[in-house]
Length: 177
Image: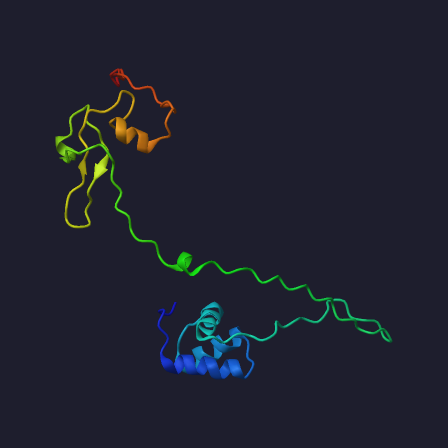
């Protein structure tokens, strides 16, 4: 696969081949033979679209069933064009601003994983992006949950009971012999 940047010679060759009426597959073959590249038909089609080269009319194939002698070959009826759809507003095309999520009403204790006690909230904060280790809320957690009351509301819809039963697990040692 070729990188996303096309050298200007390759783009010029694409324009020349396109103006000669060659198909995208033939253009890819011609550019690959000329420059020793490995562009695919889809890569050529994508680059042509980005350059603003658009095929004026869609090519149609001949009918599968040949016409009988003396019978006129009728062209197939064209599909009606789709009505022009309203484009989305320009504000919808702009990337949304990043929002830093936070939990209202909870001041996390920011406890490292190794210092978490059995009943501490395990809602994560921080991360490894800035070289920081992941820390956790650390407030007392709700029965049947891994989170404190405010964080439990963030992780599942209100009113939904936990499907797991939380309680002691009994293990039995069995000797192999």
